[in-house]
Amino acid sequence: MNEKLNITNGAIKIRWQDVVARYASSDLRRSLWQVVNTLVPFFVLWYLMIRSVEISYWLTLLLAIPTAGFMVRSFIIFP
Image 1 (cartoon, helix red, strand yellow):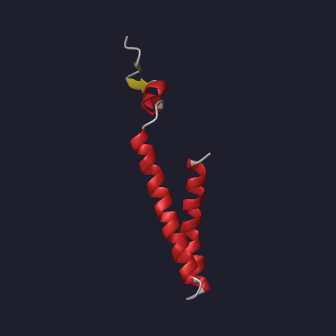
Image 2 (cartoon, rainbow, N blue to C red):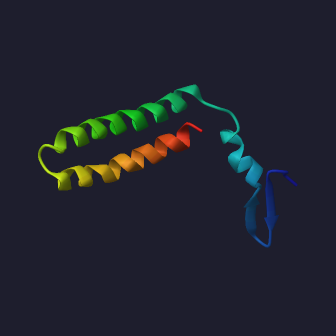
Image 3 (cartoon, rainbow, N blue to C red):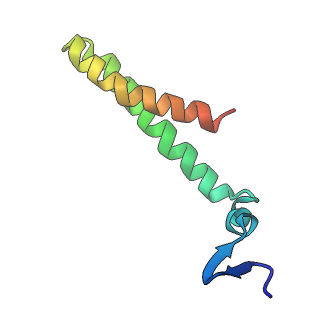
């Protein structure tokens, strides 16, 4: 019987190690892309928040929500 597949009662079961094996090594290109698509929007939204204080505090508060999301995401990426 194949070690990767376990066929029981007509159902195919795949070992979880085989499913997550492709994530076991790092990929520099994907890592850099994750950093870029986190930090660029964060700093753009942060700058817009600074500029929007002159217009309206409510607009600044509205911009703070996605900015906080990107800040949490950057905290997760940079342990």
